[in-house]
Amino acid sequence: MGAMHTIARSGATNLKHIIINNATHDSVGAQPTGADHIDFVALAEALGYESAESAHDGDHIVRAIRDLQNKPGPALLEIKVRP
Image (cartoon, rainbow, N blue to C red):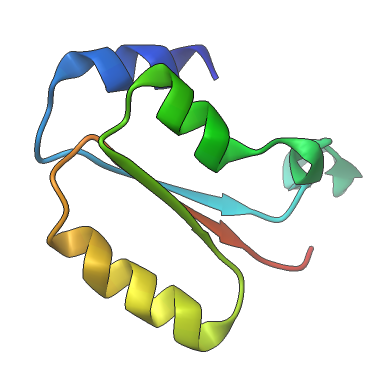
């Protein structure tokens, strides 16, 4: 998460940050990470991202990805998926 501060302060207007959040760490056998309890949208906004959004169902994900293409960066999209 330390990189999020660097990203927010970079001023990179073309940077799109996508988090695919399944709340598990696959490399250690799908152990829970606790990421389901982190509000990445609020965190990104507090750090200074130009925009942040979270999507969790198919239609919302498709719309959010399309919208992300037209937003100035740094912009964050969290996609919540099942483990």
